[in-house]
Image (cartoon, rainbow, N blue to C red; front, side):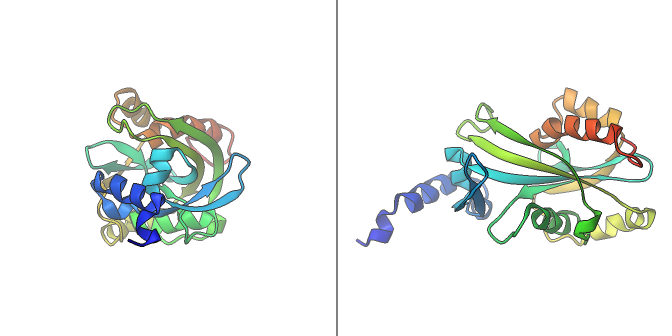
Length: 211
């Protein structure tokens, strides 16, 4: 028996991953950080969530000229922010991560100079009955981008050609009242319900953004 087989991190990863529906996603390597923001290396996603390791997630609110927000409907029927994901080992920055996620999840290719930073906040939690073993310890970074009318018209075709077709069922435009109603009714994913207050506060003071 080799030392590699006794590696406790590998053993814990394999055991935890076998309990997940998506093994590929659970073994995704995420960037791990210390309390002061220093990079500590990489760890499988499943261990980040089981051990409460600090990692970064990115979300992008996508709007149009009429002040509507693009939301995704995920498996189970819950609404979520249009684009979201984690800072992975291949990403050099949070901006790189969200640009990659925008391409993968809705099929749009955007430049970093179009991104507007909304805010960042810590999300700690391990009390969800649906995932009793999960200890989430994320630093969430929120972005905003407004699509042109031509991009909105081409969105359906881009979305149908996206690379990640597993988790997102559909995308649709909503006004702020509909978004808040979904959150109040428990029809919103955690990423949306926790992040929408940050977006609404930011949009109130941004010229040219109709929140």
